[in-house]
Amino acid sequence: MTEQDDIRAIMAQVPHRYPFLLVDRVLLCEPGERITALKNVTFNEPFFPGHFPSQPVMPGVLILEALAQAGLILGHRTVEGDPGTIVYFAGIDKARFKRQVVPGDQLLLKLGIGQAKTRLWRFDAEAWVEDRLACSAQLMAIPDRRNGS
Image (cartoon, rainbow, N blue to C red; front, side, top):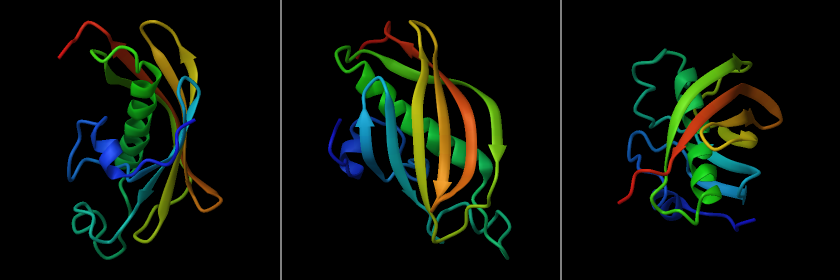
């Protein structure tokens, strides 16, 4: 288990940058097992002016992207011994949206590794706002150990 990681630690592992970096803090990470991360949803997000501007709602695909980025962090920490590994997002199954996410919400991103085979990882992913489920999905990723830097 790691201690809480701030945005600098996240940026060292995730190649995304503004406006596509959607994880603000890692609260808990057990490599090979699970991760809990946080996304603060503010009115200043670049998507709100164009996505239901009179009643801003975070797009569902961006909730899934935030979950995928948390999975990327978990994947990187799981294969920590192999610095040449890149983890690619490979698919989404069973995505369900249960609650709207609006400015002011804190999105709690919870993922567990459901399957970790050599060529395909499956994450059971959930996004929560307070004690209410906002989104759930099965996400897939492929670790590519052939790429080196």
